[in-house]
Length: 382
Image (cartoon, rainbow, N blue to C red; front, side, top):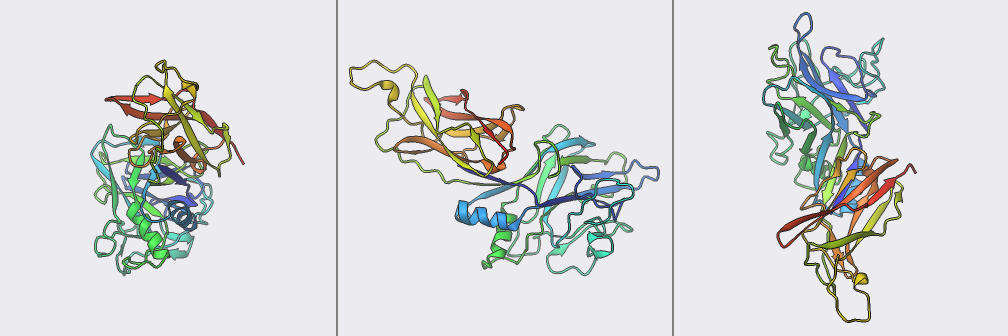
């Protein structure tokens, strides 16, 4: 029932063709293999993104209260081209620290004060390791283009076997990156807490790259390019690390369940305006739209009922009509107590100065019902 979003502390793209160039504040992250230059030399790009370890620990310790959660890395597409074959992106945990820098693509002169294809920090400081790797660490590059980051694969690590994460793309598939990185996040957390059973892997972020058969491929038909919005975008689509967990409870007390599809649902506890650091508990008022007449001393319109335990909530951006939080049978369950149904929304992951719409979904007598009757609110700059 809970979804919490974190945004990157740093991100940057590495370009093999410009081995010392930093792009730490470019609004675009890029992963590609292009060979349409005059000499047909493949130009490979990979990108790095990192999320603050203390923020991850705070959410797990103080909000989730344990390691029973799911985590997803999400990047939103800005441009896609050349995806004509079935291809895969690979996501790995980076093995060494790096510095964001403040460059953009093809600055003149090139900015070299941050991470690049060749260096971890800036020009001539800490070159990425290209041989004699420590245990469980590897890299990949072409001769003459040494560098491009180092990472843990988990393939030979008996304690961390699920560190390699992939997403497949086809010609007409969705091009947003949305991968389950739960095992990587749990290893980072467990390593920081010195929990046994894990190889110590510090949080240096993620590296995102094409599969090895794509990178440095000289075939003109193999030129996939995906450009994603970075944390420095001026759009509403920065990357995020999403942590989701089920903290729902369902105790109905003396309430009665609504059993007709002709129902009325209103939103309670909604001031309409929220600061980005707030958490709000939304309550639902549920009743029949046209209650059966009975002789009683109280109004039927003030008698609250409850939606069944399979009911869900979702959240849309009002302007774009895109799901910010989609219906999820595990993580957006609607709870219930003796007062009625409720759910909590963490405002931190929502873009400020925008309006959002809440949707309620339930199933009654085999019919799926979605309610979105003016359940609006706005997140403002604090």
